[in-house]
Length: 88
Image (cartoon, rainbow, N blue to C red; front, side, top):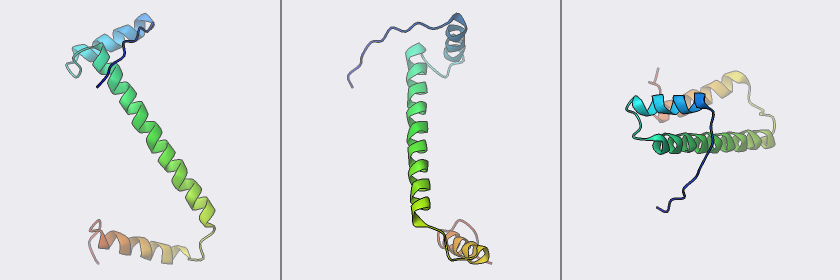
């Protein structure tokens, strides 16, 4: 994987935080910690985009003609088929 070297300026409090994370043993160095933060941010943004897409899809689908008990029965049935909840 190609790498690019970056130089950043951060406040002393952030530097102390990074050093604490590295000294905890979870990360080998500052770069590893910062890459992990970026990956987590990327994952968070992807999840947000997926949620917004699903919300948009739901809004475009219109209002359901089913009542709440029917909706709950459908959900329960799907969960049982997927093995997520036991059959009654």
